[in-house]
Length: 394
Image (cartoon, rainbow, N blue to C red; front, side, top):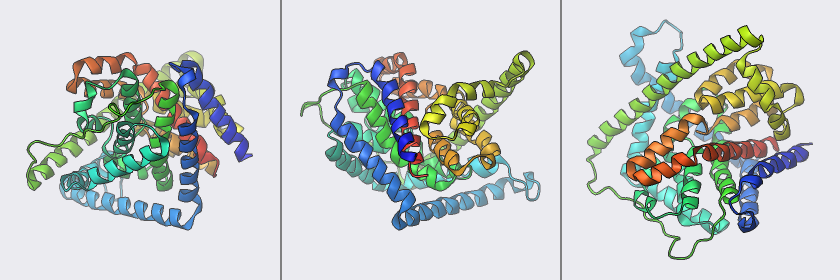
């Protein structure tokens, strides 16, 4: 039965992508098939082999320890503000981002992370035949996040075609930031967070390949990674990383306050007027999609509501809602929804990505804003694709 839902999920993604393709005749099915096979093989290794289980266990323990160490720093400053035994989301989930941000900064400072990103991207380009810039962007987005990744290739923003700019933006929206992965793991099973990061890199490229197929000549297939003209000192880098991590934590907290309050207001109005919550309405709308992805029929409305909440608000709001109902759902539904949630595909990200590009190149930023809805649509389909593939192994 899993094979049937894998097929229906793939047909769903292709069926929703094909009509909006700029040039259906130019779609290259070979690289798409290669990337799909890599995704299936990766999901199998991560979930069904000893090496995969050991790897995920190592990553989980590593981030768990990092979060614990981060909380130690938080407790030193804010410990007296918490009740004994109580857990505060801002203090225990968001503020440890500051510590992980420092580690990301250190890995960047000593060129460890750029080395990994560059050569994994180059290796990936050999397998799927797509451009080096596209593959570099897909890999770096998984580590750096949707805003920071554009800084590393800002020299090429002015010269890439609109089709390539869409591909880069899709990768950025389909990714997550390494700095907040630990926070995700406090709300979702770590194995699904790791699997989603791996699968989303390729899902974004597959969707972009269908939406915007194009050919590259040798002159166009270049990769120019921006180096800092004046490298900051080690302790200056630490200070900047601390402030970057703090900004992320505060921004996420502000968005949670606003979106959760707004969602409660909309739910209240829908309940008063229609005697049905807004999230329940969204659940019914997304139920067919959830079913075709492999979610059991009696759980599609709940799962669909969580998935829709993520698109309308953000992944943190959806994860908090998901934690409340996860115990009532099957392990298969939990896995599929978890993978779907691990990305930045939501309405707010359109403005973030367009603003990030505009800060570097105003004209290209305006282009991103124009295809913003198309970008959200493609990134959401990338999440559907990743979640469908994980469902095949559950």
